[in-house]
Image 1 (cartoon, one colour):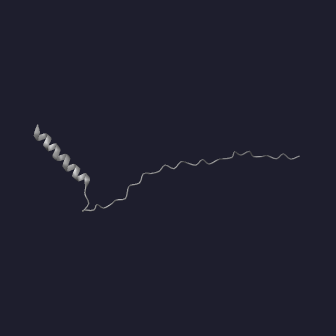
Image 2 (cartoon, rainbow, N blue to C red):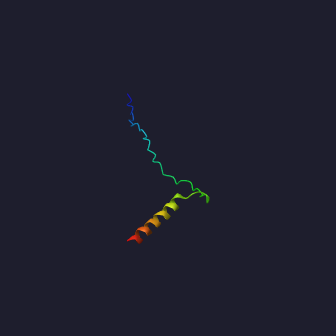
Image 3 (cartoon, one colour):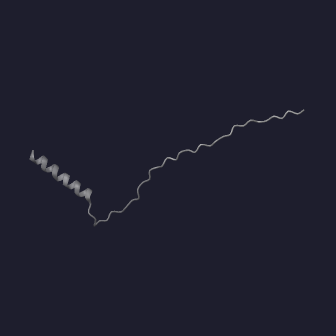
Length: 57
């Protein structure tokens, strides 16, 4: 009588790795020279206010 060796192998289950989204740079947009620049005007106003406050003291 022959003895047959049976190989026991574990079933491997591949786990899916979670994909972490990488933040992308926003596309560079050229400024329209005719458009109203809020940041610039705000900076100018703040500068004027600071000067007024400092001159009052």
